[in-house]
Length: 500
Image (cartoon, rainbow, N blue to C red; front, side, top):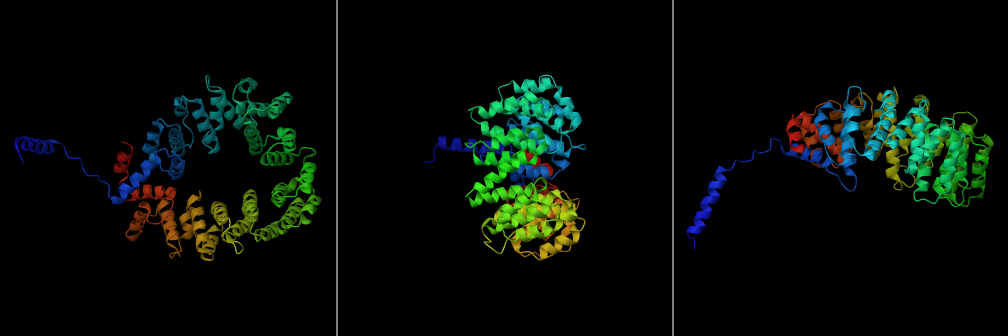
């Protein structure tokens, strides 16, 4: 029965609904709301690390209009978001360098270390800034060691007191780095610390030793060679670390290192192990006697025999291009990866045929499914290298696209999207039909990313990418989202929603 109490309650609800201010409808269109959600998703920390992938994709845009977005990240509490924010601001800075005031605002030393390491890796920290940082009072010694690494790699001297402070600290990794840097600056006694590290039983010891070897190779710290050979010859050390030690020792010309390689190859009964050793020998062929590759030529595996032919040519100082192209025909994953890395070291005129070979081998005639994903990723990187370095890319890329299967075409387009070529969209300007919806979506994104504003049906297709209907992965969708918001002039409303 509808009594007076129900009537009063009903009247109160009506009055409140009339008095309450109505929430304005979002000014964003449907695809704009999807785009804003993708941007917001990038600001949420995911257990699988997806936020890192999405934020790197947005940073890759190098768009000054994203400045409010990165400034918002800098104010967040989560360290990873703050790091991406500071790096994003540095990448759109006219000088493309890190704001040291933002670095100083970070109170956590480990976060500072991560930021400085990433800034160095991305060329966002100048030598002048490094020299300034190394003298900062109160700066954590771990951060100073990271900066010192960059300075010493550029033949700049660092006060030994800075290195000693880190070597005497509790951080095992930084203590090892300090000893390595002291060795590089001529301190012959610093090897004692690395020897003590090898003899210790502390957890994480081998991770630290791997880091030291990788750092030495990256920055050409040659004094580590004898210690690297000791690591390579420890019988109870895990195999990957022993191989890394052996590679490092041979790279830096350490006496007895080649003999250690030979002994291991001749005694190995594992086909996989001999392939890894053969790849190492090819990679270091310029430091080896051509006769060493006779061991590979006598192996019972055809792919190792072909690596022997490649290595012998390179060790003799000859062009190995023909033999390297023959190696790609074996369709072996490690071989393909080596060819790609080797080609990057060469002048583009010498590397071009090899890079094209990596692309043509992506889908392969033999075992086409096995490791196809990795081969396609190699093709992406090869296409990116061609776009960035080859003057003839404008003619070559369209030819490669037209003569390649669908997945390889998509890999080439991904390489163009990733490239730092000034105008990569021009490389596909004369291609108007694509065999797959994914390729068409990638081509549309490439054009839109570089200023060719989509209109009409193209704009609808871009909106479809944003909403997830074109099957592109989220990093590409978040780039498409930002482009869509710019083209439709909805960036202000979207950022207001995301940064509220």
